Image (cartoon, rainbow, N blue to C red):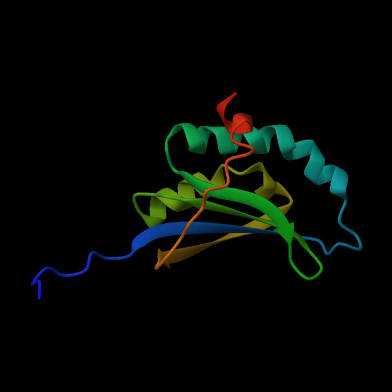
Length: 115
């Protein structure tokens, strides 16, 4: 039996964005108008090697999105999160995710981050 301890979990920060307004009154054009700036923000995180995963979706009745990042600290994660243009029309909460297991191999859209 080895005396080596198990390394700590990999820490990833989940930036969970939720629109301020519910779907019934949310203006999707407000979201679409920010897509070019959102892509620039995501590209900057990607180029720094801190982007783990990103995608859109929604809550029961609100638009939303999730960006997973590697950061040096919660303060670094907050600073990165503050750069999202989607914060103008919603709120981002940060969850520290101690990754027990993860297998993210989805790269079909990576060219959008590399251009």
